[in-house]
Image 1: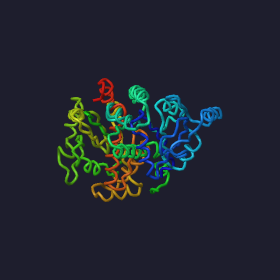
Image 2: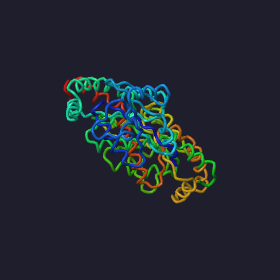
Image 3: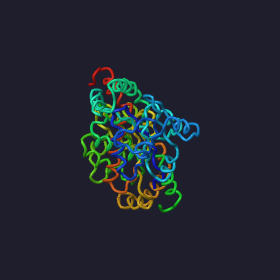
Image 4: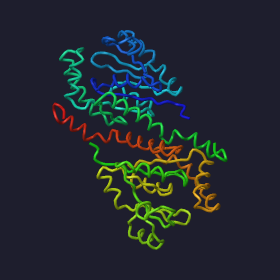
Length: 205
Length: 205
């Protein structure tokens, strides 16, 4: 009955845990992750084409020029962007495509996909956020300080999102997003075809 | 964290099963039913003050004059209305107050409570709707015919609602409404206080 999937934009400060939530969500077949392109170095265990398309700055600039990206942003001296290619195709095929996007990039997407679902993932507290950033062991103290400052700025932008999910535990946060998606599929505009068919076929459908 | 409850307007054609769904929902403590006033005769098992406040036409007209009703409508020669009294009080106390309202009345409520959640319950098919109306054994054939015609008109008004729930089984429909309410409580505007507290208290909350 519901042919088309949803475009789900998931943002949140660095350290909010949105990446882990996404990995949990895509264990369900209905969800498909939009793979971003980035110029930042891979972290341990990250695979090119799965977690990101890792690009040089020259390669990334070329993608911008060729208009291959839905949006892009510069963050801590690195480019991050969303290749347009498969998003719309998967949505048409009924998949719910998750776009894990920096807050900065989400605004650009809202202009292009006003019908997308905008979900903001936030940490339960700023001190918990700091703990998570320190625990990663991938960033210098200076980078962590910058990210915390950035996180505060980003938190104030929650209003631009449709929903807020507090990441207390990954399981609960992922479940909350699943339920939001479930509810969104019951939006009245998605019943146009069903109800019109019902009213046009005498005796029901 | 979420102090205020939701106002939930539940409508649907006669025979859509919205009444049974409501009785299922209010088994949960979080939900509170707004009891309507009506001039129609009680059906078997219906209790005054629980299912409806049963009123004479004169009593009902007096309530209208005293401005005690949020809305009222005439349906099949009977008055139906919603006493304002406890709705807002319960919402303030964190309860999700369900308003079981005829489609005609829902429009009036939207003007007064634009922040209410509007959910449209529909039968899986028109033939199933007819079966349910006949099965009730409380109406004449003429009334059933009128209600079916009315149902078709009402179905075309689904667009005025936020969500549509198809009542295949009571359990599934009630569950769908619970999940809609759960998701609505994650709407970003409800996080204003949480996030502002977080940003104003250095070191988190």
